[in-house]
Length: 76
Image (cartoon, rainbow, N blue to C red; front, side, top):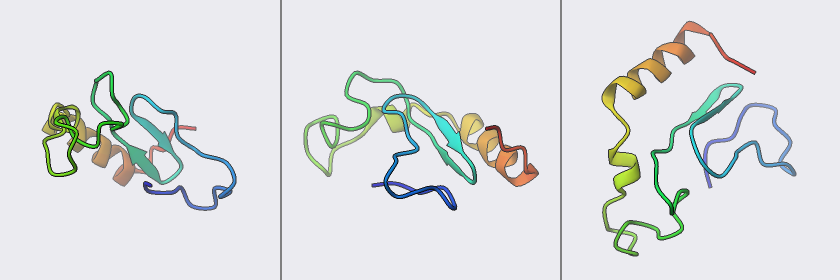
């Protein structure tokens, strides 16, 4: 499950499994980790446990991504 780019066909996933990526109007951010995307569903293998890969994304990275989207600079 995740955000879906506008007008992207439902039959084809726009996302790679590791790393941050932008497709159209959607930016997906992932931190580093061997289990990314969360195959453990939390670092302690519980849905209610921490996800250190997400906590490792800095405020600056999030602000930069948001500013990029708001400025309309959408890479292919």
